[in-house]
Image (cartoon, rainbow over all chains, first blue to last red):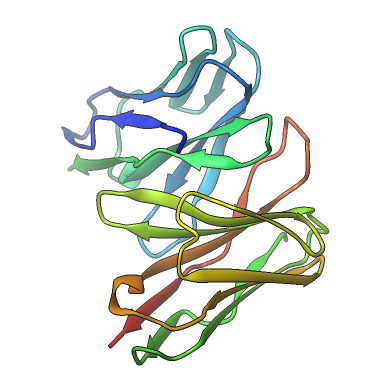
Amino acid sequence: ILNVEQSPQSLHVQEGDSTNFTCSFPSSNFYALHWYRWETAKSPEALFVMTLNGDEKKKGRISATLNTKEGYSYLYIKGSQPEDSATYLCAFIGTGNQFYFGTGTSLTVIP
Amino acid sequence: DVKVTQSSRYLVKRTGEKVFLECVQDMDHENMFWYRQDPGLGLRLIYFSYDVKMKEKGDIPEGYSVSREKKERFSLILESASTNQTSMYLCASSLYASRGTEAFFGQGTRLTVV
């Protein structure tokens, strides 16, 4: 079983706070790393697809970085808003084309 | 608008029943996946298919089988449902061997086995 770990498991922040989560994955057989947002009663949706060491992606107030040599990725949210409340999943894609998901970080933004 | 559709949103079945969960995608994707999601355990891969009639076991295949007779359809079969298979089941699809692609998910099927 391939191990993809996310931390913290859950997080409560005040509106306006900035926050970040970590995804750890194997540094061998790397193909891609994805971040997904999963809101309650909806399907997970992709935030970022990252493939190269040193990649940095940004979408509005959310950004992500990737270090494939040491096997980690960070997701940052600047100025959290209540609508950012969701579970954030990372997925490691190895050369076998399978998607291995972490257990997720549950974010609650308190107004 | 891309779409992955699961046949049922909610399902209640009895122990020992044979259960079929259907998933259809309209994006001509080669890869299709079945996951189950349980509290604290995240998404765990049950089975994966990268082509018609091709399948590979994921991390937790025991008690499940799959069928992919057509490219757009991937079925998950619980041969004899048990209470420990009560869970949320998610189907997903993606393009094959394409680095820039993402997975697209269905709406999920919440299965309760009584």
